[in-house]
Image 1 (spheres, rainbow, N blue to C red):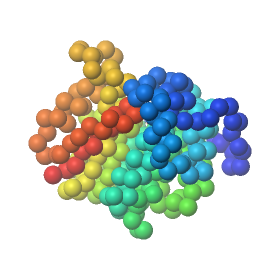
Image 2 (cartoon, rainbow, N blue to C red):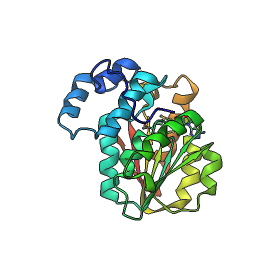
Image 3 (tube, protein in one colour):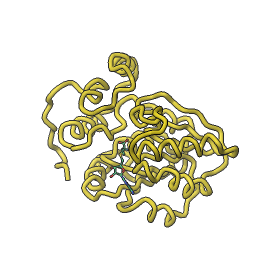
Length: 236
Ligand SMILES: C[S@@+](CC[C@H](N)C(=O)[O-])C[C@H]1O[C@@H](n2cnc3c(N)ncnc32)[C@H](O)[C@@H]1O
């Protein structure tokens, strides 16, 4: 677990372009990304620390939502004012903290992470946040945890293993309130969904998820061309 007061080493300025360079997240022009970040409210101190630590110490830093997407999640949450949020895929806790900012005073965010190390790292950050009492971390497989949660969701963020997106949707949709929202991340899968047929099981799975969402008549939907793409879905 990340020690409480340890400052991560500062190697280079952290922005969208740095993330784009660190791994292959290059759908958006890095200069446009940096410009958009400059003209958006900055990350708070804790989020910035999580982002820096993740970039410099985690093997998969590209998984982090990051500044702009995090701000988008926060804004969405502030618009919805949810009482119950479900996040599938905690990673280092960045997006959970962003989403939790819009919770109603009696609201709760449940977040699920398979990997114990990441769950522990995220919990360490949650413990340092003023929102800690509103965040409930579950460690384990989302397919096992979701059915144990007896809640009605106002907002769901799907951001775990791509091959399970359809299953996650089917598990949460019956428990999503009418006019509730689902956000699903990485729906362009680094642009690989544009190939027909797509190569690789993840790109194929995301293609199938996108097709399924398009066909459903009981939801309103739009693709948000932010970072690696977000499907924004509203239950009718
Ligand atoms: C893209 S990362 C999440 C990023 C995070 N939401 C953020 O924006 O900072 C995906 C996470 O899902 C977790 N994951 C993968 N399969 C899972 C499963 N079956 N159940 C729960 N979590 C899973 C991974 O370990 C990883 O930490």
